[in-house]
Image (cartoon, rainbow, N blue to C red; front, side, top):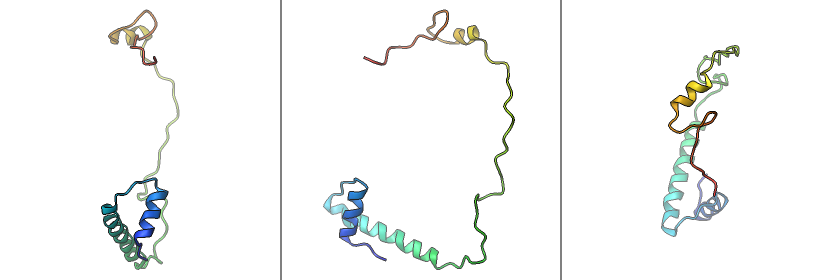
Length: 95
């Protein structure tokens, strides 16, 4: 399957892209290259290959949540450059 100029314009419109006239041919060539690669992949016999969920046999090994000693509030405030007795002071960001 090959795409033509009208297909590229339609794809660009659907993707909300503004293509300059001189770039349409380059995009058409790029899309056709990708489609050629996909056709080459479709030609490979994969009938004896099992479908994969993951590329490796590694799985997520979750750990139990455990409460740990956290940094004391006063120690954390001492690390900041500008604080009051309870909070970090930061510049106002909303006008």
